[in-house]
Structures are given as structure tokens and as C-alpha cells.
Length: 319
Image (cartoon, rainbow, N blue to C red; front, side, top):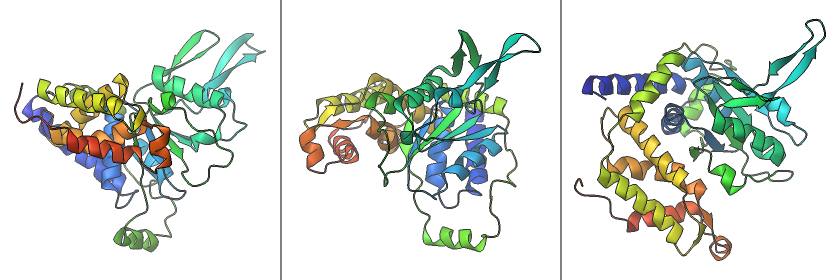
């Protein structure tokens, strides 16, 4: 990536954040994480209480990149074909025709994913990994960009199916939007007559430009010293006395991918250790499983990760 491309990338990224921020007020950091996730070609898991703007975030991102948006309300009776689509026999044409499901969109909001059965969850997670749907041995690409924003309600757990650790590992970033601050809350209340803040958003880039930004982000330089730092962090999560399962190789790669995009969004052509520190919690915490004793003691993966970050020295010089 050249300095000119880096400057264009940062300027465009800020424009995207500003545009989405018109619909999701006062949540610039969450918006930046979501856009970083999209440009790193990953998927986002939001754990939030109802009514915090998860649907608005998904619709705003889709509108900003001139893409399509769909919403799937996950329920216990939802079938895999309700997500991916189904093949139906056309009697007039005398052949089977594929009817795509709601997963065929640029941004797919999978609302309350933990309410669906494990079989239906697996169907969505398979599409997330493969970026295609296979029905009757025929593959149907979902297109690019393709981003799933899945949500979980952390409060009400009755009738839910917890996502297994192996499936959580497939989400690039896990974060929350949270409630707005006081000033943002007043602005939201003042605009109560406008029911959908995303309706008037204008696209800032095309879906093709999103692909170009993803390629540019992947080309950002990351020094061997920073890679060594990431490796030491992830290895420490596996060796820690309070963890039963540490960060996988997929998790370490996810941190590299997101750090590159984050660096580009700041107008840099290289990754610094502070990028890794800032992204470590949203990228790695959900991949850590605590041992029983630590869980009973009320320890959280975030606390373990923060301690490991404090104990692991970042690189001071290049290798």
C-alpha cells in the first residue's frame, strides 16, 4: 500500500463511519469495529440487550456501501432451508429451481441466533465460512461483500441454545453497542418522529470499492516483531492457569487481519503494537474458555486477557 492509497483509505473509512453514525448515534467505536470486521471480510457477533440499535447498524452499513440487507429472526422452529433457501420443482418448466433464502444479502442480521436449534445455527455458520450455499450438490455463491451480524441477548437465556466454542471461533469480532450516552440519548429523543434513521442515508462507496478496500487492507505491512507479539499473546492464553481453552490459530490470524485494516483506517501502511492491544479484547476474548474453578470464582475472559496483555511485553524494536 502506497502513502497515497493509505491516505485515501483513511479518508474513505472516516466517511463511512460518519455516514453510519448518522443512524447509530454516539457509537463511533462500535461502528469502527463493525466496518473493520467487514473490510477484513469477517463476521460480527453482538451481545446486547434489546433496543440498542443492532438492526439500525446492519441497515446503515448496507446503505452506506450500496449493498443489500436482510434480517432473519431466529426462533426454535426455524429450519436451515429458511436461512439458506430451497429448491422447488417448477411444473411448467419441468425442472428444479433454486429459491435463495435471506442469507443472500450484503449484510445479514441474524437476530437472537442463540434461539435457533444447533442444526440451523450450523447452516448459517457454514455459509459464513464458505461464502456459498450448496443445495442438491449445486453451489450458489452469496456474493461480496458478505457480512453476518449475529446478535445474542445476554439477559434472557430461557429457551436458548448456547453457541459452542468452535462456532464462536468463526466470528471475527465480538462486541456490543451498548446504551447511548446522555447527549446522544437527547438527540435520539429529539428525533423521535423519524422512525427509521437509515432511510435517508446515501451510499458513500460501491460494493466493488469495498472489495478494493479489503484487498488494500490485507496488503498493510506487519513487522515480524509484531507477529511475534501476537504469537506470544495467543500462546499465553493457552498456557494460562485459568483457561481451559485458549485462542486458536484462527483467532491469531483474525487479530492479524483486523490489525491490518485498523492500521489502514488510521492512515498508516504498517501495524503497530497499540493496534494489537486495542483489538485484542473484541477479537480474542470470545475465543477463550475458562476452567471451572475460574468460572465459579466469577472471572471473565476479558479479565484474563487484560492480565495477559499487562504481563506480555510489546516489542520495542523491529526484528
